[in-house]
Amino acid sequence: MNIFEAIFSRRSVRKYVMEPLETELLEQLRKMIDNLSVLDSSCKVEFAIIDNLGKKSQAKGLLKADAPYYLAVYCEDTPIAYRSAGYAAEQLVLYLTTKEIGTCYLGSAKIGPREKNGLKQFLVISFGRAEGTLYRDMEEAHRMPLASLCTYKDEPGEYLKKILKAARMAPSSLNGQPWRFIVYADRVYVFMRKEAFPHPKLFTSMRQFDMGIMLCHIMLAAEEFWMNVETMTEEQYAKKNYKNGEYICTLVFNS
Image (cartoon, rainbow, N blue to C red):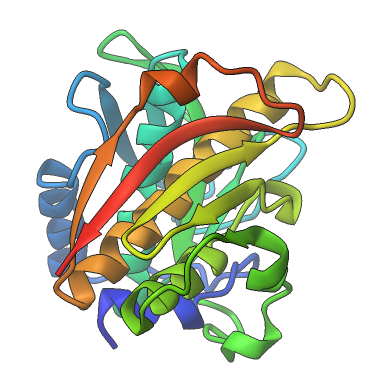
């Protein structure tokens, strides 16, 4: 299984075998952390691997899972920083999936140091060998159909259709699936759906994090199909106030 295939088979794992992982695998994870693709180079995102084999570093919060290891995610307090954190974190989650390691995003959990190099801890990802089923069939995922997520202005090509299918599979907090797309033959306008009522800051921050996860899926799928993607922010859309969504970016695809 490669990292693209992991998009369609990963499931959240909440029960783990409390046993150590191979030293080589943890070293590979550290190297990957040092060489992640970034969504925005101006945003700092950092990670810390926390060992909980002795159950001395358990995550605290409303959503938590007892696991042998946790990955603490640190970032700045801005919408683009949260998106950048989601974009980076999903690369690590999918990498671990390819290594037969289970993971789960724990949105409100905290563990270990609350700050790292001036960045605040945002959330925690549990990981380790799964106690039970690690993978699932794509059909088991509760996701909205593309027809509900996309407004089609043109008929997209086969590769763009596959890229959108990968975007659809992105996990999100409370399975909110906040992304919406306006699709043309060679470009996609990305929006985040507005909520009908105000929500706490953590909820809105998590939705930005979710958008980063989804953008990671798009970029990995584009790479799989040898498609070049240019990400841009178009001022005429960014300045406009939309009733049902917030403009995030425009993605332009070329083969």
